[in-house]
Image 1 (cartoon, rainbow, N blue to C red):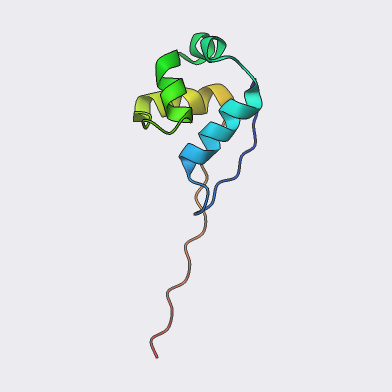
Image 2 (cartoon, rainbow, N blue to C red):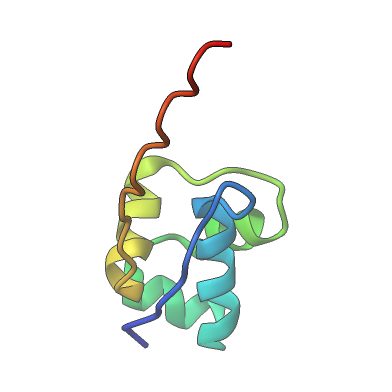
Length: 81
C-alpha cells in the first residue's frame, strides 16, 4: 500500500507518522516484513513502544509507504524589546 499522505508537526513526530501508516495499512507484520524488508520483531517492538527504529529501518518504511519529509518555513526571529 503506497501513497499515504501523513502530515507531521511538532506534536506528531516521524515515529508517530510511521506508526499511523503501519496501522492504516492493515497489513500483518509478516506481510509488512516481506514488503519493506524490516524484520517483523522490530516492527512489533516499535509499534508497542518498546524500542525505536534504526534510521535504516525507518528509511525502508518511509520508502515503502511513499512518505515524504518536507521542511517548513523557518519562523522569523522575534524583535528584541
